[in-house]
Length: 212
Length: 252
Image (cartoon, rainbow over all chains, first blue to last red; front, side, top):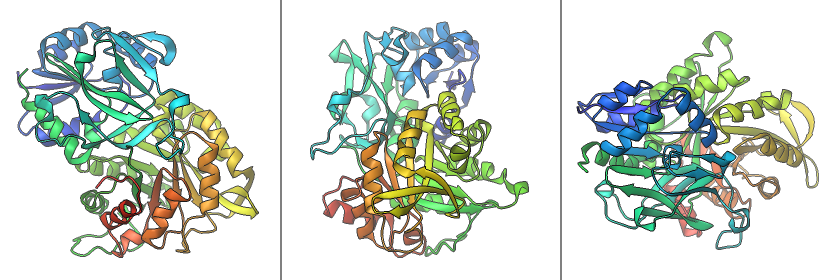
């Protein structure tokens, strides 16, 4: 039961995610899998995603993984990363597609008119690089991570939850946007812990021992 | 606030770091994994590998290098050099690269930028532009290390590759590369202002002040340098401390 499954639906390289988790989860089996049965037999589930959300939704369904993802999201420690966070919501502006609808809310593109820094310079999209993650609520996954620690982001869309109570972190980029959401056994982040050096490894380590 | 990035660049040939890296206490200065780990410890925000392997027989070695580095260094990794096809891009990403940089192939066949970004997402596709000044306020795109002219205007080309789906531009001034006289700030600013995707300034860094200038005067989103870090003259941390003192947001 201690196995950690990383859901592979063919979108992007999951090796880095797997290696980073192996790095902090000594003695725990980490599998990258497209097999719904293996997802359901794992003790913990990581739901990553890269590229465009419409492609991600299509590939997820093409592999018949939707029921397993929904089941895992209701029953196991579940970590959504990047598009894997966005897909948990109802709908995305990217390609105007529905998501899995676990959380109410919309995935929005950074608004072109607001992409201006405090000094008047233009903010580029994608939002790419290390930005401060401000913790809005205490959570076991923030253990030993400084409030305002920098994590690596690369994205053009962000989640806009209907329920502010699930927002556990925000980041500022032209606008304040939601960097992390959590509810019960789900923790989902827009940034990439597997590419965020010490802070990222700490978060993954916290996930590996999390008992929601 | 988003931090401006500092990116050390390593030339790799047949799996070995070349151009005489000179860190103190480094057991094997030619080992890409050890050098990458050292830069990670110094606080590098990303690492770029430029594969300059001449022999086509040795081309696949870079994949093993990327695999090994990605297993041990948990910051973003960009790989460029000899990338021609969407398959090349996929192989590098599957080995563990986060971004792949396309240079000559983008000029020869711009469709490869569109195809690659359509397949793997814009965020993984960097287009490298090597530019030389041809008249005041005018720069032309060159390939093959500045030997071949393309007839393309650098600013127009930057806009074009953005529209094709590039997620980032690695901009190198061929006039400044290797001179240690600093970035071509006018070029950097012109390109950065022309596009809405991030621009990495490259070519000519001889001092830490040059790195700061790239951001403040060149409006670059990231700065890339090689020799200033390789020869132990300065650490990435020193660069960031100077940038912070100049009011630039950095990850320290």
